[in-house]
Image (cartoon, rainbow, N blue to C red; front, side, top):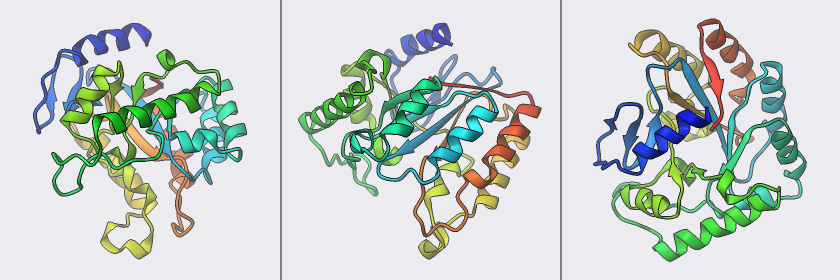
Length: 254
């Protein structure tokens, strides 16, 4: 995996990306971030993000252990500094999972409706990231071992991607198409809410109908969910991983 990722980095650093996703020999990019890896390989990168919630974290860890699987976890500095979450973070590290940055204060980098409108300066962006890395270092993880970065809110633009590259980081985001990232929603959000059964069905439908299946997918699930959500996706995560393994996929960490 290290050799493949090194090859990927060489392409990332030279890619010129517009507003539409583009595909290179191995990766797909959107707004300067990798959103999918090699579609010729039957490999999925399972990623989890968190800022202030971890109510499904222990269950997620247990499921990954059951499948002898390693994943990638992107936490904010606030999450890393929480005494409540520290034992679970240490356990994830002991299990061999990737632990990386997700910003320090879960900043919104750019406007939701005008993506090219930045809401942070470069200095604010870098200072916030430095604080995130300081929190990661408290778990014995040097910055060089946490250089793959998933942005807060999974929302960014080409400028954020450029700043990330200048800071020696590789920006990644989830692969669109399955709605797995909607597992944070709850019924009171109306049409925005997607049930776990709906997300589960969409993932498998994408896998069975896409010519490349879930090859190279970055599949994002939240590490914790709002208490108002009646059906956390973790309830069907074990089943999903079993099905995908039976279909020949392997799971890798960054």
